[in-house]
Length: 540
Image (cartoon, rainbow, N blue to C red; front, side):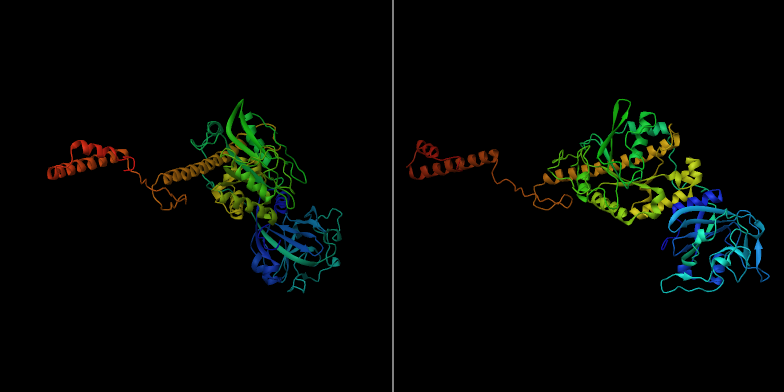
């Protein structure tokens, strides 16, 4: 509650069901930051249209009321009731247990009371069905709570609103000491005039053909691009593979285990292959054990996964990371064994409540991937559950302000560009393929393959640079590959140069001896050639 500026997904969805349509909620008042008094209430909440008032008491009870009309001070200065056929009271939690209940208005003429001296009054001012904010200033006590002077006898719960036999004691536990009070403005989300991301014009058949024809970068030494799925338990990693697999198999499949469980259903490392009939595609989708707060994959295992040391079907042991002595350990992996793209699979309905422990594990994998130059994307699952309009018509996904907001939020949370966030809906309740579901899934896969190619191009650039540096006859350090070439120029003369040197030496000696003979007549040419025969040419 503290520090957040929007409702949790659970509360938001419940209010949308009670209100009867998909709506957005904007925080306009919070007691812990704004203070608690009638003046502040009217400054923050008047003329905001529909609002929902929520109180959080110290016994873990969460309750309040909704009105579709404005709060405002009465012009005449006295309290006045306002009609509202859509108003209702509610209880979301009782003693920290989620148990939503709605109490609809049964006398719309007395739905709310407005007055400059009052705050949010549901029912008649004299005997209201419910009040959360008192009509006087209340300061925080030594525990940081707000002790109001309300009591159960001051309310006539069930007079204007239908209590359904529930007592106020069963809603509030007769506790009116509040940890906090929040008021949200309720707004229609509307529809964006333009999509928040450019729409892909290719249809499913074209996208499917592109993926089928995909081949990794030539000369990279990769037969199948490897995409590693990383996510928490229940995020939809295995369901994402099943969705992609279904597209190429022509019907909804369940090759990878999926479902709800306390711990990860995926316990083995699986390098799934995709088939188009009997032909294998040049892609492997690698599934891992789901992240958990206290269990999951050891940091050493993440390093081994990215570097290609982990064999297919390896069973993860949370307390025992893989070692070179583990069965099947790949001691000298090739580039074909390594991961070429990492996909963080994140449940879009849990972005605003992501556990810090899980987030830190995402950051660890991201750090290891960045060190190796491995690109990353975010596969944002369950986008159909973000907004009711999108659930009813998935083609509205790119026109949904709510989806756009969650995309921005998760991009900031993980630290990746928004273009790396790929919204999808996995097959879960469907028994037949759906054109729109397939398109978004194929678009996400296509983007991952493009990023995998980027990794391979970068790898080739590094290798080519090193080859170029190795051919240089210099002792300078290469800035790109950071290797020093220590080869020295050859000090041996070539055979051609040695021959010419030998001819010059013989010529010089012959002329020298000739002139010496003319001077002394002491030697003959026979003596000269005998002298030459004693010379060791190899030593020269």
